[in-house]
Amino acid sequence: MRNLIVGTAGHIDHGKTSLVRALTGVDTDRLDEEKRRGISIDLGFASLDLGGGVRIGLVDVPGHERFIKNMLAGASGIDLVLFIIAADESIKPQTREHFDICRLLGIPRGIVVLTKSDLVDSDLLGLVRLEAEEFVQGSFLEGAPILPVSSTTGAGLDELKASLKQIAAEVTQKDSHLRPRLPIDRAFSMKGFGTVVTGTLMTGAIAVESEMDVHPSGNRVRVRGVQVHGSAVGKAVAGQRTAINLAGVEPSELARGMVLTEPGLFEAVQSFEASLELLPSAKALKHATPVHLHLGAAEIEAEVRLFQAAPLRPGERTYVRLILKEHLLALPGDRFIIRMFSPVVTIGGGTVVDIAPPPKRINRAQSAKRADRLGAGSPVDRLLEYVRESAFGLGRADIIRLTAWPDAQIEKLADHPDLIRIIQPQWWLIRPDWATAKIAAIREALRQFHRAHPLLAGMAKEEIRSRLLQGAPAFLLDALLKQTRDIVAEADLLRLAAHKVTLKEDEDVALAKIESAFEQAGLAVPTTNDVLAASGVEASRARSLLQILFKRQRLVKIGDDLVFHASAIAALNAILAAHKGQRFGVPEFKEWTQVSRKYAIPLLEFLDRERKTRREGESRVVL
Image (cartoon, rainbow, N blue to C red):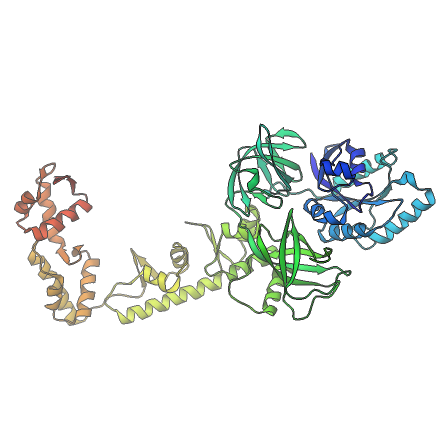
């Protein structure tokens, strides 16, 4: 089944709602005020099965200038437009404004429908047809069918349905394989169901019992039920008008313009950069001009920041930054409309280019060049730009948040030769030149460390992280080290592969003296400072020699100032082995080892940590 959204557009009282009713039998004017005044005020919806596996959702929009904001809430999801011109009135002001909106929103196809054809003679109908052809010349509607119809007599309706079916088969469908996104155009409570929202599913699919996020609030909700064209289904797919029954949220917490998305992926923003086209009919646009921004079903106050010094002239296109008064979910590629505050008229529109400009300040010219690289470049250009701007590279979650690309596309782009992809322990992208520079910096830090501390085996990993990779993911250092063979990781230390500890003659003597002092002491060891002071070398070198003995596992450190020779620990283990399974207390332990409480307590705590003993209340058991 091909699912497409078809919307009406045109001046007030040109017969949009009557046409939808004639096609579907549905009166889309649902509000009492609409019926009383005889005009459409809000969006209306109906569906039409054209046969042959083609089903369309019809969005009927109000034509009155006061309700353009409601028209915009429904126009953003349209795949094909029925552009309405009444044969007895021809082109009017909202005909022009609706046409500008459809063009700026990038609606790809349409049909020009000359309604009320029964009210005019053939000569006037021919004249209106010529005016319509001239009006749409050079636009997306040039060459589109121009069909006279009468909603009263039914004339032309069959031809219109046939044309709709033909064009619907040619229009590219919305992609149900992308990540789901549903702009909410209505939120209400239904008896027996609770909270219900409706909207056009722009991308992806939404299934019953799935979880979703509501933006910009960030609320997590659960899908209790899904309806498409009034029928309950297990899943709605892109291109369908959809009603979603939600659990975990009240209708009062929802509003038109909010968006349902797959959970945990996206964040609402308060600014974005975009390509903006100013209509030829608009006045020149100055820097920091306030506007009404319409994106998806949302309307938000915003400020247009130009990257150029001069105002943007009518008919021109440029890159801008939009600063929003409220948070909004926007993604690259989204189309939007801007309208003036006074008079409230449409003045332009464009396409979102980037939702996350770099935090560091750059001047207007640099911002414009960056926006052009992102706006005019390919997807791989965009990815390379984002990775280049990042401090430490990007993970898959970052890329999804910035682009909404599907996993398959991300995987394909990640194979670019100008990127290094890390798989384990986490999927991550870095630039080869960044990795080369960072490895060189680590290598130089180690070289300086070895020069300053020739007796130490290496530099602590955490020191390297804090100096050169502060704020980076913990795994990134190890991933960088896999890119080189001349840096060796040993436990929590790093060293250059060529580095070897070479002792001088006096250091050899001192090393032996330090080891001998602890070995001869058995379990009643002297203080570390006393041993080092008697080593015969200055304190800094003595400390380094001590580290060598630790690394060689000749000494064991069990406390802040308690160091034992490995042979003493081995003898202690032998003593315990003779008492395996026996319960004992501190007095018994002192008797077995012939040490004072000063040593007994730290040794017992060490044995607990090593799982040689287990404490049970005031006593212990030998394991």
